[in-house]
Image (cartoon, helix red, strand yellow):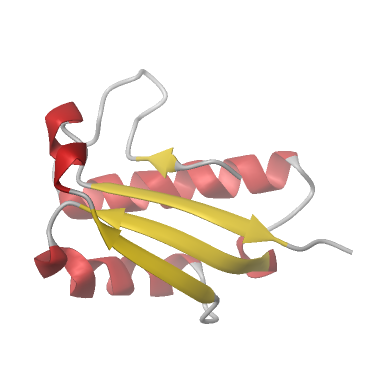
Length: 96
């Protein structure tokens, strides 16, 4: 699925890194469920961070949502901050 960001249903961007990361994973969960999948079906994630210093925070949040360690790619993309974003995640899930 395409990139998910920390945007609330009312189109407000969540405040702070952890809140954005959690919201993005919640959004990812909703999209997966609509497709008949779960977070456990994820085999690959791509993560965009504004600050590499948020890596530990990302890992902590990911562990709350994805108990296994899928393949992953991480990029630091400073320009996300221009849109007030601190985090973005996309994923590939495999469903039988």
